[in-house]
Image 1 (cartoon, helix red, strand yellow):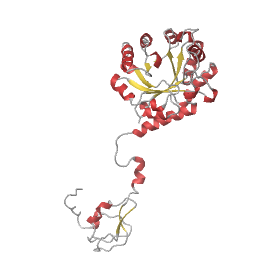
Image 2: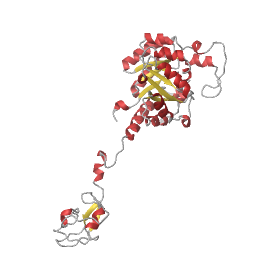
Image 3: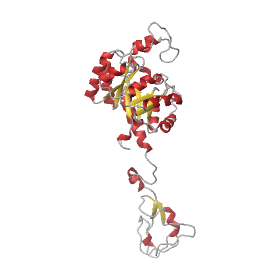
Image 4: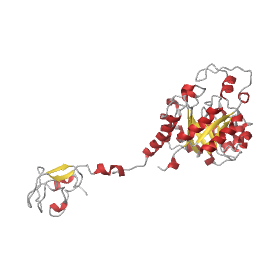
Length: 348
């Protein structure tokens, strides 16, 4: 499989910057060194996500017990950092782009030259946000966690006004943090591809690499995985994020899995040719004089595979040798007069 068939890998920074710019820059470096094609940011403010002073408490999951404003206040990346992060990405040769969670973030990101945008699963109902992102004319990634088919249809309809379908990527996503592998439902990827005729992929919130590797077998265009420097450092997204070496191995394993699918093939491959000669073929095990009869006593299926296949033995049994044959010599047609005719019903 040629490398351009591999998925576009996105390392999601999320809240793993832990509100420290040097850590955010180190994540850019780590994503590039792991072999990711891009690193993605999240651009929002707590006030742009929820009304200050409201105390809706999250129930269950990774952030259970926190109120929404506290969650977004802790997870938000200062907008003043973006310029430095985009600059570091350019220096490291890795694409930097973002998920704007509010419409005001789009002109800000445009001024930074953001090359593409993503719509988070929870924002798929915000058709004006989708319209504004698509209106930039840049590729748009849409996560589909929790969305019904009708909601995805609305999002794609709005996005495909300014954009062509090959500029839109739909990511199968399970919006649990972390998400159980049993709820990944990767078969949905094929439905998204057939139904929308656009690019497809996976936004992976599961622990480990198994689900992302499995997604590679669906010939996805994009895989997104959260990245942290060390889970032990803690942070809002740490528990379901990959560490740099894990991300590097995940990318390699996805490539290997996709290579392994290959194509329909029978017969030996290039790497099997040495072993191919170890298949059994017919060899004379005792010296024969000219005129001496071949038998199951003096001809055996042995290695290496230089002679006739074992199934041909019955065509030699009881027939005289046309010449002297040395022990160990592979059986050949010139050892008998004329190539025998197979019994009725057998074809060569």
